[in-house]
Image (cartoon, rainbow, N blue to C red; front, side, top):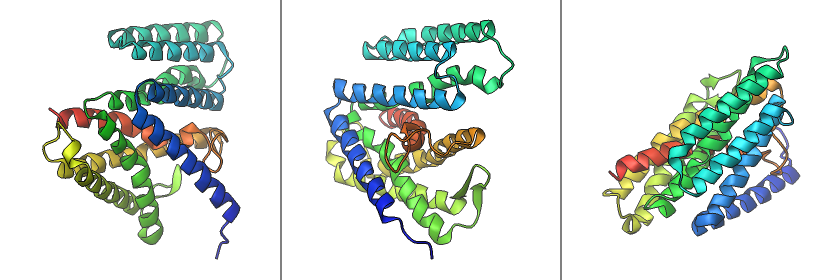
Length: 274
């Protein structure tokens, strides 16, 4: 039987609790506090991704940082109509820089700056947009129920009865049984959450049922966020994106599923609210 490394487990637990406390505190405060936290998360995630691709110090990477700063500036002042123009301009500039500094290199490194704007920038911004919804102070937590909550159930079910692997090359431990357990677990947690806070939802007619469906549906997407982050790491042969969060890795290691779940919760919530 494999021995448990209690020191690593304690480190992981403590850093996880501190991170959770920061998420809860800034999420409840909302406004500029939550926006600032999201910006910091996004920029760190962008740096981690660019470093893996090897463009974090190159001209196209710097263009990516500037485009991300512009994106969040537009977001802060609710100038949403200018965001498509920003992304179009950023794409043109990045491709121009790549062509002018062309080397015989992996095409992935050429496209990495643009991919970074979509992955840890645009998608993670939905955490802020979700908080800005009418019931955003309550809806926001579905993102973490569907991602982190489903992770716990998926792990437990996968360890107990997992046999059929989803993507053995990308993530050998992930199983279809674990996915089913994660989805059902997230639906259960969502239903409980909806029951506890039912009286506070202004736009949700059947909060328990909708909460369960919302969390369960988003949990399906959660696992693919995890697999995407794992696939990139495996492609570049890295264990973690960084060592920022002791025992967990970097922002992209800890928020990989959250990045995918946030936009799903945002749009599903809008549909449910009519």
